[in-house]
Length: 111
Length: 112
Image (cartoon, rainbow over all chains, first blue to last red; front, side, top):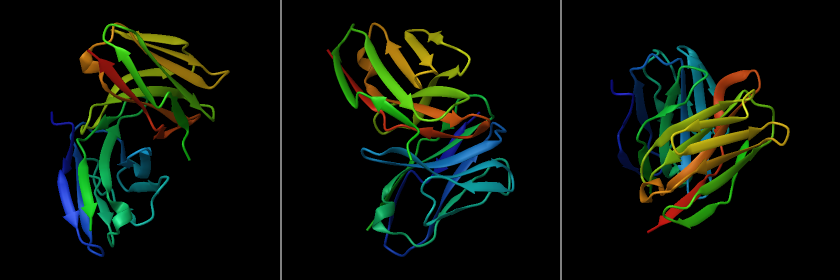
């Protein structure tokens, strides 16, 4: 039982490049979310999903896209990377009425 | 916008002492959760308290919830060096359990 798996762990992008952060969970959780964590800002919600085929925006969705074609996977796409998107990204999942399970994070630097 | 706000932002105590962190929130909730984050790691769920509960224990952790004041506290008793971490509260919204919003966290440092 791997829990929530995020790849890659580290990534450096040039401004304007695009990439996809992968997130997979094997717990059959309905809900999945993406957060970014910046120093002094805590965690901010980017996008979330309540089930396959359903996604919604969080607090800071601009510059990011998501899709949820399966229960297990919830990839986060950066469309055109900007230095302001330098951050640590966390994916989390939960079944509902319980605690979230977090991945170990992706540290992204945009130069 | 932040739903939960932790207080204090940072706390240093001697090993063996008790540590208390507080969380205030703005809107009615279904439940409130506390998480721990060690440096460079993901968040780990510690405890969940429902809106109809007033106190909950888990090992050395004690959480209280006062819905009239929209506040919660996390008490760690007999602190250890391994408790050094950031602690976050997270809240959902009443009748909506699809997402939770985190506060900015309290950085706890246990001094040897």
